[in-house]
Image 1 (cartoon, rainbow, N blue to C red):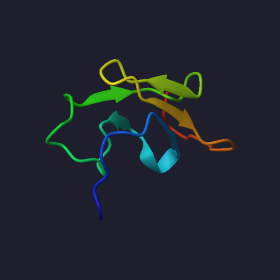
Image 2 (image 1 turned 45 degrees about the vertical axis):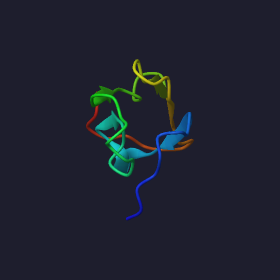
Image 3 (image 1 turned 60 degrees about the vertical axis):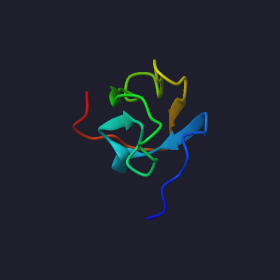
Image 4 (image 1 turned 135 degrees about the vertical axis):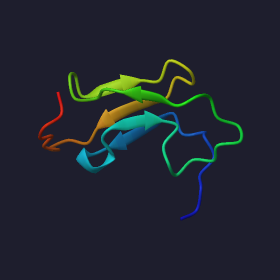
Length: 67
């Protein structure tokens, strides 16, 4: 897997990405902030308090067992 720079400011996520945290596993870590878990299940999106990246739940995603 090729690691991505932490430059994308809006990322679509799905059920397979939960539990969601920023930075994501496919991002480089050397220039990242501490890991923070984000809840996109309540309103369909979450904003990282460290870097401002907006994570949006992909349209039509079905989340089971996450509250």
